[in-house]
Structure formats: structure tokens, C-alpha cells
Image (cartoon, rainbow, N blue to C red; front, side, top):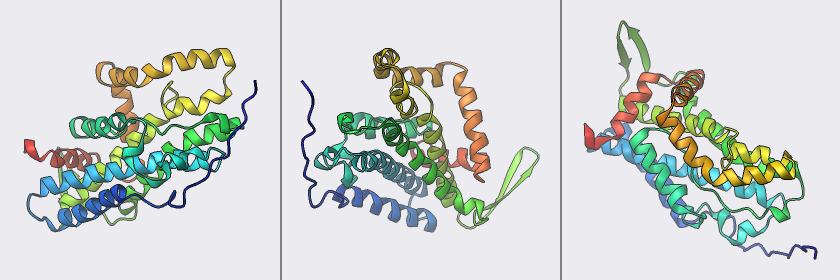
Length: 272
């Protein structure tokens, strides 16, 4: 029995951003102004800015997967609401939103979340299949560059290293600390998502090119790839190598490691 794809009708509002996403963007913009002007508790302002910015990036990451799938032949992503940037529509909001935000707050790392569900029966090309998986991490790379652009262009604070002390000359230090932390999260997410591990985007990029036997074995380990990565980063020396790579990339993007660490500390307003 052969499978015949069923024509899927794209809803009229398929590409209209959802009110949930618009609200998250509004919080991100307002909190950015609050950090810049040091309104109220600046630590709480930085917390809102970084977390809401991270939520925006999660939505854009999953949207990139969905829009790549849509133009590759899977029109069902429109019916599921994936093209409206609504995080509540993801297959697992707990893995896609809650867990990554908790890890950002506690560990300061852009942990990959769950994904949109793609019907690969509609994808008739290995290259398209790989590009769908690559679309999310590439989005994080672009967002990292956008967040780091002010530092690359010289608009960020002037940082001078004197012995064991870092001297920063700026009138809006808290904003630059928060932006540094947000850019760093995008770098960590980019690196993590591109790792060739079953269950992650990097592994999904390779999967279409594997033989059927290797693909079956790959799929067996895929549900545990996320958990194994989580344990490896916090319990083995892999975490040290990972952070070394991330710091090196961050410095290439014009970010300062002291500003990043201080930014992550600033957003934890409850501990200061």
C-alpha cells in the first residue's frame, strides 16, 4: 500500500504572529528601555529583558524549522499553528519553553528545547530534510550576531583590563551587561544545536544521509540524546571544553567574558 499525500489547505492567518508572541516582544522592548533607564529594580529589569529575549529567540528558532518545512512541502505545519510564532503550539511546551528558561536562569546556558513536529512524509529530498533541521541553529547564529553587533561596531562600553580588575566606562552599564548575557545565550544555543548528537538539530542534519540500518539505531538513541548531553555538560570534562569553545566564539563576536558573567549575575536579582 502506497502513501498518497493529502492536500492541506493553508489557513488565511497562518503567517500572522500570535498575540502571545506579540506580548513577549512587547515585554522584551519595554524591559530593554527599563534596563537602559535603570527603572526600579534594575536586576529585575535585566531578568525580564534576558528571559523575554530568550523566549523570542526560542519562538524564532522553531519558526525557522516550520517555515523551512512549509516551503519544502509539509503544509501541515500551517494547520498546527507553527507559523504563527506561538510557543504554546509546540509539541511539548514544557521542553520547548519551561525547561530552557529554567536552565537559563539557573545555569546561564542556552539549552535546546523541544521542537515543532514535521511530517517528513511530505519531504522528498535529503537536502531539504537537512536544511529544515539546520534552519533553527542558523537562526540562533544570526541572532547572536545581531545581539553582538553593537559591540562589534564599537557602541558597547569601553572595557580596560588592569591587573585582576576590569574597568568599564559607560553610562548604561546594566543594559550592556544584560545584552552581553543575551548574546552569550545565543552563542551557546548555536553550538549546542549544531552538535551531531541524536535528538538534537545537529544530529537531525546528518540523519537523512544515514543508511536505513544506522538510521534505526540513531532513532533508538534520539530520545535520550538530550538527557545524555545535559548530564555530560554538568558532570564530565566535556562541559569545560564546551565553555572554552563558547568563550572563544563569544570573543570573536566582540563580547567580553567579564561583561557576560556580570550580566548573568545581574539578572539573578533574587541573589544580589
